[in-house]
Image 1 (cartoon, rainbow, N blue to C red):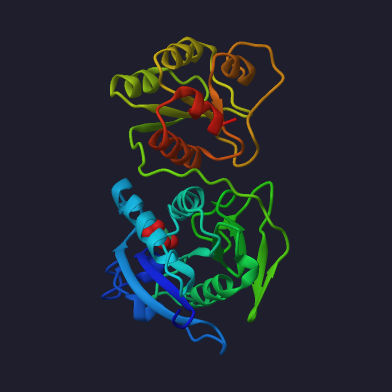
Image 2: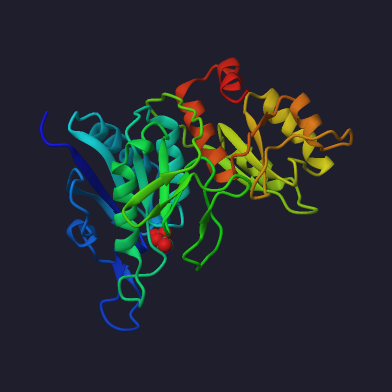
Length: 322
Ligand code: ASP
């Protein structure tokens, strides 16, 4: 085994952006070497590799799966003790959750990013990279799955979400709080969380995500089914409720073999309720809908893609959502 090594695998995002000329608009321009901060002595060697250099809204599901495969291959190397992935913040939580859900390795996977570009006063990219590398090198991070480290705060991929369009403190884990902090050169993990891993060789990409709002017609559900999607996540109201005129279509979709997952448009909390009225979560569960255990709609969509990638057997799909 060679020297212990941390790998930085770059993907782009604001952390890698700057303006070519004042006012031209920031675009991805920074490369791996630009994203390696000074580190305290005693850390493993750091090596860099570029995966892509894109705004995170430009990532396709194919690229995302390619990234997952690359991360798994890097972590399988004996000398690698952890990986840091600078990433656009807009979809960072989804990449983090996909890696968390599908890579069984106990080695730390740490995602980070920046809210300010390298052309902005107060660019925090290198500070975030430093904190992420410290976290990835810390034995306490082993076994926690994918972590998100920004603003000196350590979050679990399953719970973290982007809460603010501009704030440096945008990543939060509503309802749960962070796992820990990075203070100076010290990593403090105050809580540990169990993780779920679903082995799969592929993603089923034909999964739709629909968000409900008051009085919404059922057309988006019908359109998704007509497009031939293999699964649908509905971000329902409150504890996972839908207007009563959605129920028959949901029931028909489930009957036709298209799994329906009920999540919530609330930023935290599992779905489920005690109501007996039409469209309540209880009725949807009785109709065979799967319930999101606190995953937001975007993450529930990925879990359904992973689940349907892993198996076509309805009983196994159900067991993975139990
Ligand atoms: N637009 C950026 C992205 O690639 C935002 C960011 O990284 O903060 O997601």
